[in-house]
Length: 240
Image 1: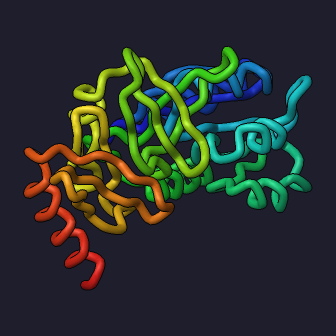
Image 2: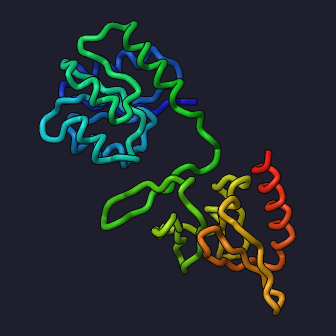
Image 3: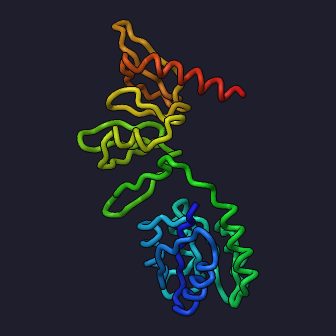
């Protein structure tokens, strides 16, 4: 796969040094650069790179503070700095590696190989969904979504106790989600199969599913048989 890389350093020569070395690596695209912590945060949220080369000491927000601010949003990271006292803290914030300036080609390629091996191969299915909250863009990992419901021109992503609205049609989301993990059980409901606890049938012949957190969602009669087969498959998979 092509690895999408963001390079962050306040020194232009240092950025160019990393970019030049990346040019010798296969399947790498430098998607952007930044020269300070605030821009780094903005570019990471905008570009969603696979890997970030991140300088520790920069004007304003430091590289460590960038990682701490982004938390779970922070991509895999290789920290770069001239000061080795930051090494332990770098690994505390889940750095893949730590390059002490000046570093040679061999040390750079070692760190880069480690990063490439640590980054999982991309699935063809949607892995993260960007949502806008209070004027800021946030990324919701698909693995945290329990179910999705339609709400006019929006779809609502339900993740634990939180709900996020995205301007996207249910059919578009259905086509982008892994069908082994999610299923559209109603025209207005997509559910993560492993969140389902039981399939219900009312006295009137209508169907629903109850999730493990107690949430009940409607199921179309036309999708009931297919859902039952899928649930048997999920149960079989969990038992192996």
